[in-house]
Image 1 (cartoon, rainbow, N blue to C red):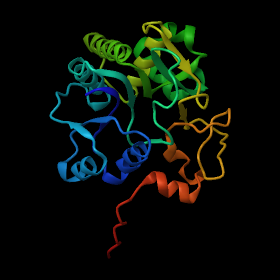
Image 2: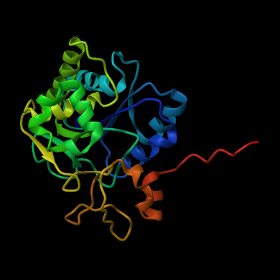
Image 3: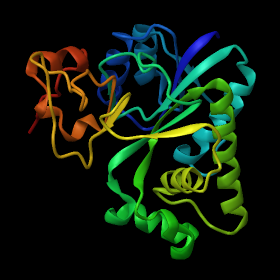
Image 4: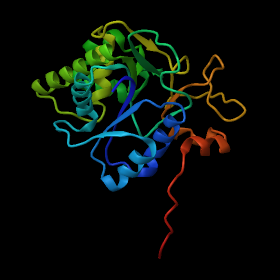
Amino acid sequence: MRGTVVMTCGYNYRAEQMIPFFHSLRLHFSDEVVVFSDIAPEILDPLVSRYGVRVVRNLPQRFGPAIDRFHWAADFLEKEQEVTSVFFTDLRDVMFQQSPFSLPPRSALELFLEPRRIMDCSMNRKWLAEIYGDEAIAPFIKNGICCVGTTRGTATAMRSYFALMAAEFDRLNQMGLRPFWGWDQAAHNFLAYTDHFADYTLNPSGEGLVQTLFYESRFCFDRIGRLLNKDGGVCPVVHQYDRTMDLFGGAYRRTILGPQPPAKKQTG
């Protein structure tokens, strides 16, 4: 494997939940796409064939896919020494309007913010407080939420990122803490705001590579329906697009969603 790679993880998804990711990505990106997954071959293999995806199966599980994916990614990159850059992303709620490598990097490791402060999000504040305590998170509680769902970096920076995340989960486990939904997001924010990462940037939503839409309230589209950044340029990666799918233009929406399976007929 050479050059750039997109890495993601898929578990318990239906085909129609994954098609928008693969279809929109392959409109703009022709290099390697790697999926860590245990999805049944009869569901995933047709997409593998259609979109040229590499699947890594039969992976060891300790904490569940949301946490274990960082261990898997670390192990994978250690074996793939010719990779130069990585985009690590969620699968079900991400789509692409351009290549995730279409914009030049701002640092070796690029993290992406949501348009909401940690203190103003009950979920993120709760996750961090339950793991690290109010005193430990007080210095950065007013900072923006750093979303774990999209991260980009050089292969060297991403190896370090994956190793640090995996080591943090191991440390928390050794302390007697047990994983819950949001563990990965909390660790991602804690490490980012306590300067564990080197040569990294925190990139606001809608000001570069990624827009994360859950807390977004204002949207701008061009005449064919593409979501635009604040500077008027097309946003390459749209995260949590499913929250606002009806806002995208109809013809463009059909283009990026790709061929969907026919709806099942109602019986009875």
